[in-house]
Image (cartoon, rainbow, N blue to C red; front, side, top):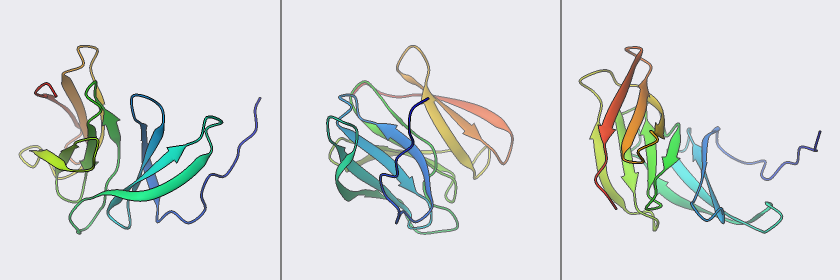
Length: 136
Protein backbone atom coordinates (compact mmCIF):
# COMPACT_ATOMS: atom_id res chain seq x y z
CA UNK A 1 0.00 0.00 0.00
CA UNK A 2 1.07 3.55 -0.68
CA UNK A 3 0.97 6.59 1.54
CA UNK A 4 -1.78 9.16 1.94
CA UNK A 5 -0.69 12.79 1.73
CA UNK A 6 -2.70 15.92 2.51
CA UNK A 7 -2.72 18.27 -0.49
CA UNK A 8 -4.75 21.07 1.15
CA UNK A 9 -6.31 21.54 4.57
CA UNK A 10 -8.51 24.61 4.17
CA UNK A 11 -11.25 23.52 1.73
CA UNK A 12 -14.82 24.56 2.67
CA UNK A 13 -16.39 21.07 2.53
CA UNK A 14 -14.53 19.47 -0.41
CA UNK A 15 -16.78 17.04 -2.21
CA UNK A 16 -16.68 16.10 -5.92
CA UNK A 17 -13.36 15.71 -7.71
CA UNK A 18 -12.32 15.42 -11.38
CA UNK A 19 -9.20 15.71 -13.54
CA UNK A 20 -8.84 17.55 -16.82
CA UNK A 21 -8.06 15.39 -19.88
CA UNK A 22 -4.31 16.03 -19.72
CA UNK A 23 -4.13 15.24 -16.00
CA UNK A 24 -2.46 18.59 -15.32
CA UNK A 25 -5.30 20.10 -13.28
CA UNK A 26 -7.63 18.78 -10.61
CA UNK A 27 -11.08 20.26 -9.94
CA UNK A 28 -12.59 20.03 -6.45
CA UNK A 29 -16.18 20.97 -5.62
CA UNK A 30 -16.22 23.11 -2.46
CA UNK A 31 -19.82 22.63 -1.41
CA UNK A 32 -20.13 25.22 1.38
CA UNK A 33 -18.58 28.08 -0.61
CA UNK A 34 -20.54 27.23 -3.81
CA UNK A 35 -17.27 27.07 -5.77
CA UNK A 36 -15.16 24.73 -7.84
CA UNK A 37 -11.45 25.13 -7.15
CA UNK A 38 -8.85 24.29 -9.79
CA UNK A 39 -5.47 22.95 -8.71
CA UNK A 40 -2.42 22.82 -10.96
CA UNK A 41 -0.73 19.47 -10.42
CA UNK A 42 3.01 19.00 -10.49
CA UNK A 43 4.37 15.88 -12.23
CA UNK A 44 4.53 14.14 -8.82
CA UNK A 45 0.73 14.84 -8.41
CA UNK A 46 1.22 17.41 -5.65
CA UNK A 47 -0.65 20.71 -5.76
CA UNK A 48 1.33 23.62 -7.23
CA UNK A 49 -1.29 26.41 -7.42
CA UNK A 50 -4.98 26.75 -6.61
CA UNK A 51 -7.67 29.17 -7.74
CA UNK A 52 -11.44 29.55 -7.80
CA UNK A 53 -12.41 28.19 -11.22
CA UNK A 54 -16.22 28.41 -11.21
CA UNK A 55 -19.02 29.53 -8.88
CA UNK A 56 -22.54 28.16 -8.81
CA UNK A 57 -25.29 30.50 -7.56
CA UNK A 58 -25.59 30.72 -3.78
CA UNK A 59 -28.39 28.70 -2.24
CA UNK A 60 -29.09 25.71 -0.06
CA UNK A 61 -26.30 23.51 -1.44
CA UNK A 62 -23.20 24.05 -3.55
CA UNK A 63 -21.53 21.86 -6.18
CA UNK A 64 -21.30 18.10 -5.77
CA UNK A 65 -20.19 15.45 -8.30
CA UNK A 66 -18.37 16.39 -11.51
CA UNK A 67 -17.27 14.88 -14.81
CA UNK A 68 -15.05 16.00 -17.71
CA UNK A 69 -15.92 15.28 -21.35
CA UNK A 70 -13.71 14.68 -24.40
CA UNK A 71 -13.67 18.45 -25.15
CA UNK A 72 -12.32 19.10 -21.62
CA UNK A 73 -15.59 20.70 -20.52
CA UNK A 74 -16.42 20.30 -16.84
CA UNK A 75 -19.93 19.23 -15.81
CA UNK A 76 -20.93 20.19 -12.27
CA UNK A 77 -23.94 18.77 -10.40
CA UNK A 78 -25.61 21.51 -8.32
CA UNK A 79 -28.11 19.95 -5.90
CA UNK A 80 -29.25 23.24 -4.37
CA UNK A 81 -30.67 24.42 -7.68
CA UNK A 82 -31.58 21.16 -9.40
CA UNK A 83 -29.10 21.83 -12.21
CA UNK A 84 -25.97 20.52 -13.87
CA UNK A 85 -23.66 23.19 -15.28
CA UNK A 86 -21.46 22.77 -18.38
CA UNK A 87 -18.28 24.84 -18.09
CA UNK A 88 -15.56 25.40 -20.70
CA UNK A 89 -11.84 24.84 -19.91
CA UNK A 90 -11.52 28.54 -18.97
CA UNK A 91 -14.26 28.48 -16.32
CA UNK A 92 -16.98 30.08 -18.45
CA UNK A 93 -20.49 28.61 -18.09
CA UNK A 94 -21.68 27.32 -21.45
CA UNK A 95 -25.07 25.93 -20.44
CA UNK A 96 -27.07 24.41 -17.64
CA UNK A 97 -29.26 21.35 -17.59
CA UNK A 98 -32.44 21.80 -15.55
CA UNK A 99 -33.30 18.61 -13.65
CA UNK A 100 -36.15 20.08 -11.56
CA UNK A 101 -38.86 18.16 -13.45
CA UNK A 102 -37.46 15.07 -11.68
CA UNK A 103 -36.21 16.64 -8.42
CA UNK A 104 -33.88 19.29 -7.05
CA UNK A 105 -30.95 17.08 -6.04
CA UNK A 106 -28.64 16.09 -8.92
CA UNK A 107 -25.66 14.80 -6.98
CA UNK A 108 -23.29 13.01 -9.35
CA UNK A 109 -22.62 12.68 -13.05
CA UNK A 110 -20.47 10.69 -15.46
CA UNK A 111 -20.29 10.04 -19.17
CA UNK A 112 -21.59 6.87 -20.80
CA UNK A 113 -19.16 4.97 -23.06
CA UNK A 114 -20.44 6.92 -26.11
CA UNK A 115 -18.86 10.08 -24.61
CA UNK A 116 -21.95 12.18 -25.42
CA UNK A 117 -24.52 10.95 -22.93
CA UNK A 118 -24.24 12.48 -19.48
CA UNK A 119 -25.68 10.25 -16.77
CA UNK A 120 -26.93 12.10 -13.68
CA UNK A 121 -28.04 10.73 -10.32
CA UNK A 122 -31.01 12.64 -8.89
CA UNK A 123 -31.21 11.70 -5.22
CA UNK A 124 -34.52 13.35 -4.28
CA UNK A 125 -36.50 11.12 -6.66
CA UNK A 126 -34.05 8.21 -6.68
CA UNK A 127 -33.67 8.34 -10.45
CA UNK A 128 -30.84 8.25 -12.95
CA UNK A 129 -31.21 10.77 -15.76
CA UNK A 130 -29.54 10.84 -19.20
CA UNK A 131 -28.87 13.92 -21.31
CA UNK A 132 -27.25 14.05 -24.74
CA UNK A 133 -24.53 16.71 -24.68
CA UNK A 134 -23.70 18.63 -27.88
CA UNK A 135 -20.18 18.12 -29.18
CA UNK A 136 -17.56 20.60 -28.00
